[in-house]
Structures are given as C-alpha cells and as structure tokens.
Image (cartoon, rainbow, N blue to C red; front, side, top):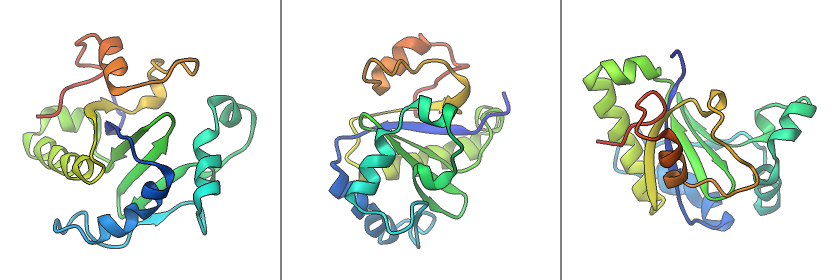
Length: 163
C-alpha cells in the first residue's frame, strides 16, 4: 500500500475549541508540534468550520473542490483533517509501508499522534492507512474509532492499535 499513515482520532471538542487549536499547538512543549499552524480556509470562523464539516462525500464527487473546502489545519508536512461526527485524522506524510517496516518512523509518528490526541482530550485513537481508499464510511451512521476498529476486524492491512 502506498498510502499515507493516519491517526484516526475521536474527540468531543465543540467548534469553538477546534478553532483555538492553533494556539494550543503553537504553545506545545514539543518542538515538532510547536510553531505556526494555519487553516486552509482563509479567515475561518465557527460558521465556515461548520460549513466545511457538514460537506458530505457527494459534494466532493459532484463539485470541483480544493483544500479550502476542507477543515484542514497544517504545519510543515503535518495535517489535521477535521470531519463529522467528532473525528480527525493526523498525518505527516509517512507512507503506510514505511510505518509498518521502520520502527523509528513508527515510534515518532505514534509519539506525535499521542501528543495531539492528548491536546484534544481524545476519546479513542487507531492508526490507519489513507482512509480515502477504504470503503468503511457509512454516511448514514456516525463513524467512531471503535466502529472503524470493528470493521477492520483485526486486519492489520486496515488498522493497527497505537503502541
């Protein structure tokens, strides 16, 4: 699989707190996490965030779109992608095969994912390949990390627990 590795993180943050995340990330004691994070949506506010979070798959299939249509928070090669119901993915451009085969990369990615999940007071977390190619999303039901875990059914091609 040539996909990027992602941490799928479930949280309970309201939109107001999501909008404050750049401040918390910037002030992190971890030098990789700290620094200037930016939203891909210019001048984002609660309404723009809610609009981005409310877009369903059909929107992206039926319309031309760009990163400005997504709730992405970025710094260097790291991205936090927020989506409904209360999920986000964290990635830093590491490929799934590299993650699985390189212990140093795996430990560093897991460390960063844990820091971010702690800042979010995360409810649950699992490590997954790029979600766009895995047909686990049922937009009629709320997706949770545990639901993803159950659908993956211990198949390490689709998900691994964070170490």
